Length: 450
Image (tube, rainbow, N blue to C red; front, side, top):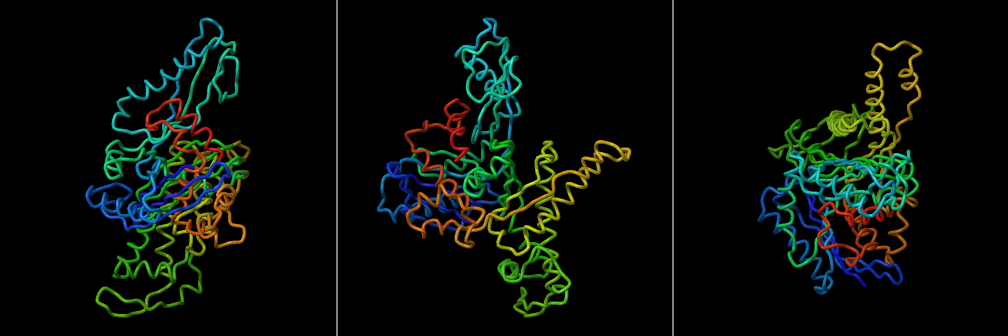
C-alpha cells in the first residue's frame, strides 16, 4: 500500500487530499481531505510567505488528522502560474554508422546542456519534461524509444520541457511540509488526466482550466502533448467587473453572477430586472441584460487571450476542439459562448492569412473548409449520468461513490493528482523529479496515456 498526499494551490482555495493506493487490487481510498481559503496568494503566485504557508499547512494538517497522522510517502503539488513550454533539440553525427547507448546519452546531454546554458532559462525551474523523440537520417517519422543498434549516419533528439519561475518555485517549496518527498506537476496536465477521455486524447483538444485568478490551457494532438501556458485572468475578474460597474461589494457581485449569470444575453434578459444591494446597503434594480453583457465581455477576453497564445506559437490549425473546466463551467451558456468566440477568432485568423488572395487561392479554400469549432464542458462526475469527465480509471478504483463526488469542477486538478499518485507509487520516482533527466521523461511517457 502507498499513502500519498496531493495539494492543489489555487488563488482562492488550497485543496488537500490524502489517499491510500492498493496496487494488488487496484483501488484508491481517500482517507482525508480539506479545503482552506488561500491567503498570501495572488494570480497563482505566492506574495506573502507566512500567510501562504499558514493556509497550506492548515489544509494539510486538517486532512492529515482525518487519517490519524498516517505516514505519507509522497506529496504531489500542482503549479499553475507562469507556465511556459520549451522544445529543446540537438543533433550529432554517428561516425561508426551504428547508434550506441553512448550516442543516446551524448545527444540527450547536448540538448539538456543547451537548455541549461541558455541565458533566457537561468531564472526558470523545470516543472515537467514530456515524451522525447529521436530522428535519424534514415527515418522520416519520430522514434519514441532510443534507437540503439539502428544503422544511421546522424541522430537527432527532441523533447518538451515545462517551466515555471524559479523564484515562484522556491516560494512554493518553502511553504510545503519538509519531511515528505515532493513532486510538482503542471495543474492543467493534472486536470487533463481527469477531464479528457482517452478517445479524445488521441484525436486532440485544448483543455482550458479557468481558475479564480489564473487560467491555463493544455494542448494535445494525436495523443501527444504539444503546448501549455497560463494567463493572469480568471473567474474573479468577472466578479470585479460586475462590482465596479454596479458599485457592489465583491460578495454581492459573486452572488449575482452565480444566481442570475449567463454567458450570452438574449432579448428576454434585456427586459428583466434583478434586485441588488449596493455598497450603501440600498436595494435597487439592475438590468439582467447588462449583467450578462459584463460577464460575456470578460469571458471573451479570456478566450481571446488564450487564442492569442495559440496564434503566437502557430497552433491555431490544431485548435478546433476545446474542453472547459473550473468553477465557471457551471455558468449557463458557457460552451455556446466559447464556441461562438473561438469560431469568430479563427475566422478572423484565416482572413488575415489571405488579405489579397485570389478567389481560387488555397488560403480561401482553407477558410471555407477549416474544421468547425466544438466546445464541451468537463462537468462534475455526479451532475450527469454520462459526463464528459467520466474517467473510468478513477471510477473503477474508487470503491466509495462519495469519494469521487468530492471532485467537482473546482477540484479537477486534485482529481488528476490523485490519479498520478495512484498509478505511480513513490518507489517508481526519483527523489528529485524536477531536473531534466531521462527518468522523468520515461515516467511522463507512461502517465500521459493514463
